[in-house]
Length: 97
Image (cartoon, rainbow, N blue to C red; front, side):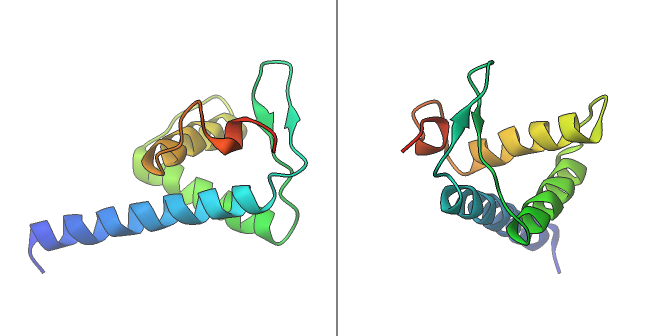
């Protein structure tokens, strides 16, 4: 397999991970709470929470995210994934339905 083909496959996988993360968050978006810092809090129940956690851990490893805690690393990975999935400040994930 040539390098260009490997990069293309990695890009497709990255987009798939971002899309699956977005799908799971949207599925559990309602009701969403807004935290004191203005961030939207989405409660993702088990077993979907286990999938989201695994996706964030894989993304954090791939993106080389760093933080003082596992939660900070996952939050950084989530921000990057949501950027890949084209979610911005006007996203429905940022405002309650």
